[in-house]
Length: 423
Image (cartoon, rainbow, N blue to C red; front, side, top):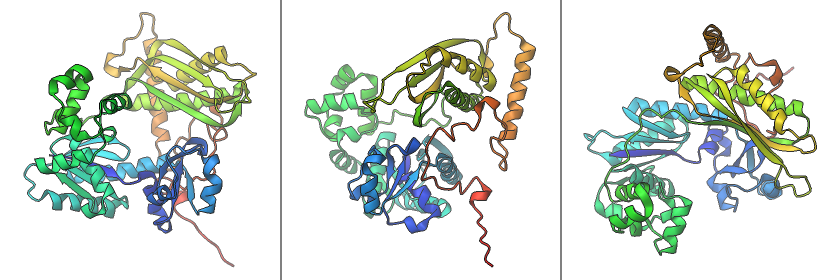
């Protein structure tokens, strides 16, 4: 049997763990630069707010209705996610972390009382982390996803829904819109809807040959899973990323190249760290810039440039220097840049790194040691990211907006302890 743990309104729940007074109140978590709503509490949804609403359009209404808004605090959310996964790993041997707020579990077939086990596991996560979760249990990963949705939607399940027989499976599929099925993308959903297939049950009752012929192997795999045939295995070890991107929308349009170069250094720093964490090296880099397409009064411009690196590298100074050089070729002072970023591709694992014929192997090894030392220093709990490139300046801090940021309750000591002195 497979299980799918899904944290309920995860970003909102993280904020509520440290501010219990928010429980029962409408809460919205915002995207970069406080741009739009990316997470909402049930109370906020009940007031008519939706994910993707631009905050500047809903702010007045939200204030009138007592909505509490937070800037996205992803360091806090990432740490809380790690705590949830740690609780699960202590209880379940095989676990696949699917996203920051979801994990697939392979449940021991010897468990007799799955319903009691599921409820106990949900309560355990809530007790140890403060994060409410929903658990779906079924014979396939796709059905477990559907079961988890029912566990979240209906309080009567008490945090755990099980689809363990054909009767439950058919009932659940009949109540599930085809667009809500894991593996059914927008294009396939539109095509199926045009054919009159609007529920997961209708899709599961199609002829297998028709599904294979019209919807390729991915559609057939989803069809098999809905019919109780497990064909999507658990990925215990996450596959290495083949491409990485670091980008940001800025608080206001940027016209000077110095500020854009500062941002490029910050993006390169993030990507260099991610490469080293994955033990990979990059062979190709792209830099892109774009104006604000929603500002009709502004001159519009977007451009990108790609470059093949001389050597596979994960060296932050090399990535930053290359990105700043590439930026110069597409920078136009007349245009206010609202978004920029770096994408690195053609990633190779460390064991497959192939230097060129004229590469300075001694210098490459020296730079690898330097980066390892840098990462070690910056990983210090007391002084995270204390060593940085001079050209990075203050990083993205002065270029982005976070007017509603909460504290780093779990990773910064200064945000945990408050001392009030009274005379």
